[in-house]
Image (cartoon, rainbow, N blue to C red; front, top):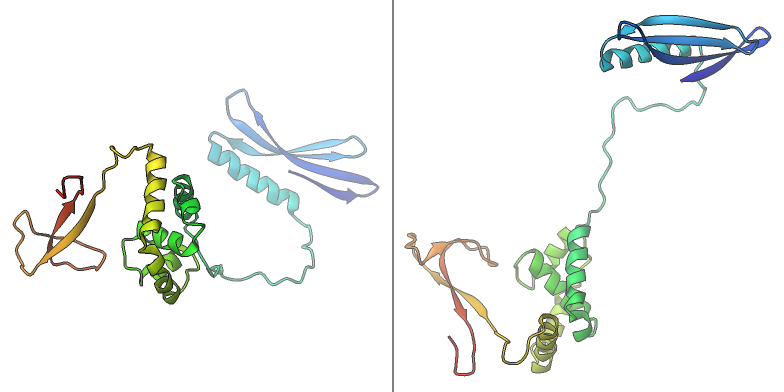
Length: 227
């Protein structure tokens, strides 16, 4: 740390230095040097630990700054720390990762850059929920979602066979699957009104947020039939 101040006709420069002594301690000193060439060394003390060195340096800084006036900035400093208001937040890393995989699979091109479908896919990956609740999930993630009425208007197009065929072709191309290697699989949930689990019917969360006993059933369609 250095500072300048006028003394008579000369200029006095002060700085702090730490010197290792013969005993192994660290001596902290304030060196006052004049522009005329004279130098005065003020010894503040010796330290044996890093904490003591920092403490002596702080004392030296106060010694150098003693007698100096504060700048008249007329700015009232806050007496208490003020918390910053959070006006918005965004799950940036999660959303960017989902968007990158979505494009890597070829869904953006297959769907003709359909924003509604991409938002539905993003919401279902973040939290398996209904189409009506997807906007709430996206809002929590920091995405301005489209309205549910807009989603409903697009459902007929999503249900058409050509839409599913484009998505299936994109998945097969990304996984490098041929017609004989493609396996389709789907699951559904069966609910049972019982309070006792038996290893087959067990309680658990679902997209409907129900805690009733349930079981998962899978269906794999093949050429001979479903299994």
